[in-house]
Amino acid sequence: MSNEINEESSGEMKEGWENDYEQAIRESPERKQKFENLSWIKVKPLYTPSDVEGFDYEKDLGLPGRYPYIRGVYTTMYRVRPWTVRQVIGYGGGLESSQRLKFMEQHGQTGVSIVFDHATNMGIDSDEEVAEGFVGREGTHIDTLKDMRDLLKDVDMEKGGINIITAHPAVLAMVVAVAEERGIDLTNLSGTIQNYPVIGHTMGSCSELYAYGGAPHYSKRFCIDIVEYCARNLPRWNSVSVAVRNTREAGCTAVQEIAFGIGSALAVIKGCRERGIDVDEIAPRISFFLNSHRDLFEEAAKFRAMRRLWARILREDMGAKNSSSWQMRFHCQTSGDAMTYQQPLVNIIRGTLHGLAAVLGGCQSLHINSADEGFAIPIEETAKLSLRTHQVILEESGVADTIDPLAGSYYVEWLTNKLEDEARNILNRINSIGDWWEPKVREWVSREIADASYRFQKEVETGDRVMIGVNKYVEEAKYPFPLWKEDKDFVRKQRERLNRVKRQRDMKKLEDVSNNLISSCKSGANTLPATIDAVKAYMTIGEITKIYGENSKLKQ
Figure 1 (cartoon, helix red, strand yellow):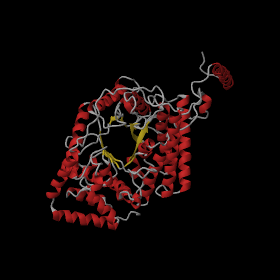
Figure 2 (spheres, helix red, strand yellow):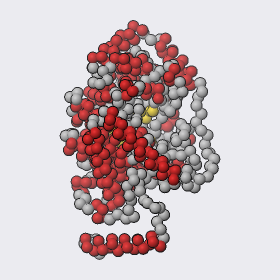
Figure 3 (tube, one colour):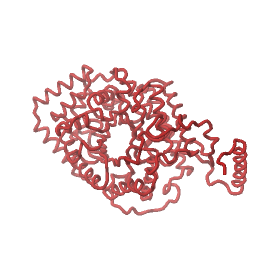
Figure 4 (tube, helix red, strand yellow):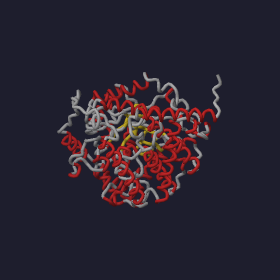
């Protein structure tokens, strides 16, 4: 039997099926009034070749490891090297978090990922009054190089990469200092710092927020300092990680996640050009931190669309010549926003599906949220269960045995095209408003995020958007695991550690590195070398931040 069907007979077949479908739903209505994904894109009951008319296999799809990289950035993908199991860890101080790191590695974690508390991100020492209530909560607290040494004491810094979820230059400086203490060649040190221009509301990124009461190290000047230093000294370090996942958690859509993530990264490239840094010197070390949310097909298509759009923009618009610059590499964390306090064991199912979408979409590393992660720091039992979820997806499901298994699906390819087109439209709109670093752009982006968040929440409240256990199948459910218990004595211990380090410091050396850092800030020189010298002299993160704020040319 021939597999070829001419256009006329194909059209007749589809028309006949559509008539049958309309008749069927007149007799038995569809289960929902409307079918839309989380970007409010209408989903049809069936997709056929007519939905991807003009689709060019070589131009629009291609092969893994080849432009436009829609099918994956590496030729062999998971057939040779599975995604890195990179569960985020962070609570207490360096000593406390190192214990969880060791536990996770024993049970199958293959990459290090540390999230830092709000005080560390903002550059506030544990003994400062404004740090009260933040120290060691929702992340690891770091005051000095001693804390970083404790954090990494059991980590093989030459094996795999170290992901530090902060944009503070002093934290990166401490990692460099520990590596140098161990005699590690910095050209072999690999890792990632969450350094990127602000996306709308997001505080945990680089922007001119200092003028509005934020931290000085989130300015454009320090963002580009980090990129420039890494390009020249840490060639294997990802100096930019655009954490657009945070924006998705705040309520933006999948389309906006693509556009805002790429827009933020392009702002870094343009900022580096102002310093004479070529696109191919930095783009290969730009990575993305993305979300995997509720709609499996939308999420898998989002990752594919974003890879292709990035490749096209970098090659065609930004003039990148190095093929590594065209490759969009990303870490993914499943949605915390989708996790519920109600019937929390259902979160295990959610995390599995979200993780599956990330794998089908070709992630390079992945964090699958634990059942309790929506409302507490995961305990060891739930954290280990998340590791096992990775392992079941890899070893038992079969989805990692062939590359890009969703390729060729009429629905997936249509949706991939649709997401890319709409994301490009948003990028064009941003360009028409102004430069990404300008407040008016951030304000517009913030409104777009807020509008999307409000629209989604209203749908949940009306029941138009189902959340199991929240607005459908509601019941009381006893949670079988204990919840994380905070060490009430931790803050006192951390302050004692800090005071001990302060008492033992060489004050003359401290004065010298302080003057050197002030000079670098005032002169406009790259601040990373002076910051590295400062942390080696045990200057605290708070002391460094104050020098940044009092002496930096933030508009540079």
